[in-house]
Length: 168
Image 1 (cartoon, one colour):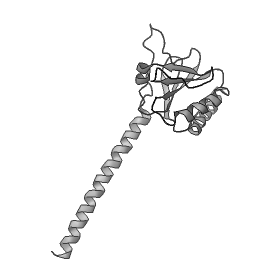
Image 2 (tube, helix red, strand yellow; image 1 turned 120 degrees about the horizontal axis):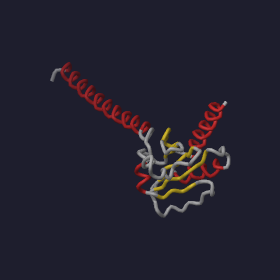
Image 3 (tube, one colour; image 1 turned 90 degrees about the vertical axis):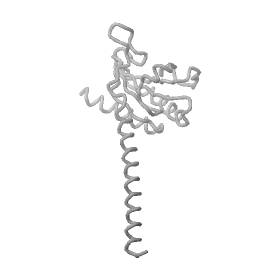
Image 4 (cartoon, helix red, strand yellow; image 1 turned 180 degrees about the vertical axis):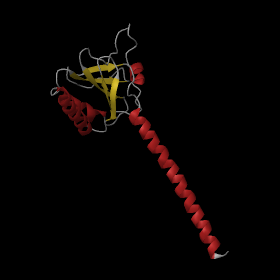
């Protein structure tokens, strides 16, 4: 075999591998983009003439932490939520949404616990743990994956600071 032919074949194989890797990377980035935006604008209330969603708080905003029974880092996130709950303004509150009817983690009384698999599925974000900000009408205005207690604290601090700026 001619050396030039061998070089062309090797380069063609490398270009093919590069193309395949790029296609896989593009697919993963697209999945992450969809996951990040999924759930925003979702109305969790059943309708105007029925009872509002269990996630909505009349006259306030609820920060819902979506967890599941197989989540290895959810305990850290729930511990951070328990610490943050006492520092929230009166019109902000935490709720925990679990798909596990036997959910029994120790949490302060100020954090509502909702154990409803159907509502958990309706929340519409494909990652756990997740933070959903739900207004008083039951509409999700923000979602974010929460990978640690520190990430939750950072998002909540930013939200409280932004809320204070908007009220000024």
